[in-house]
Image 1 (cartoon, rainbow, N blue to C red):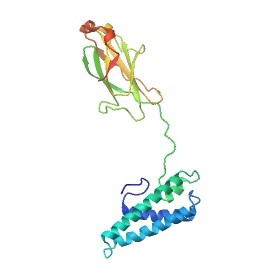
Image 2 (image 1 turned 90 degrees about the horizontal axis):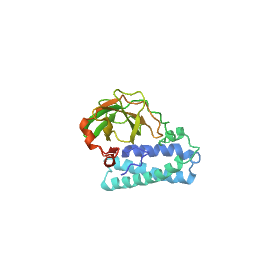
Image 3 (image 1 turned 180 degrees about the vertical axis):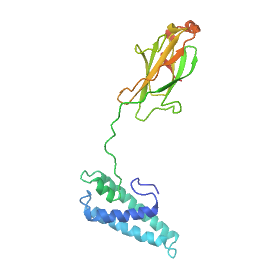
Image 4 (image 1 turned 180 degrees about the horizontal axis):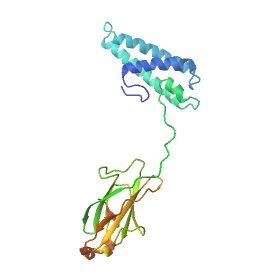
Length: 235
């Protein structure tokens, strides 16, 4: 039998849940956004369920027919309870305490504010192939994944004899943690530095990663047809 999502999964606990729901909500139907008729119907279904459970569990009366009758009663209770739960959850005057007392789920209605990333990406080179360098971002050397709350990253590049403090040039935005970036042919025989910072879904930026030096081979100048090489390709 499929789980309703707001009551226990085990049959015995569902039977207990139905009894509790009937006891708590029955005398307070209106406060829970229900009508007296709706809870009267549930009370009848619950009475049938409790009786069928006792017969199905008693070794002296447990038969295939008794078990089938119990399963039918449980199914009827679950279907009715699902409808009543929808009404209760949509009633604004029902408090979380009332839901808990009735054995219903308390749904989170407000999202946790998304913070600005506070962690630097851990940036590594996975190899240079001609005009391309494959880089990987992670949380640290062992966690090659994005931190919680991070939607993507921005990659920056600079051509300089040493790691620059500024003058970084935009390369690309990415949601991947591994990508391949084109190296500038004008830097052949020297170093290019890469860095990155995490961003959240609102494009708020965290701190930059430590600069990653990449040596550009002198032979790369022979490949300098910029029209044939886009700024990025899939890793």
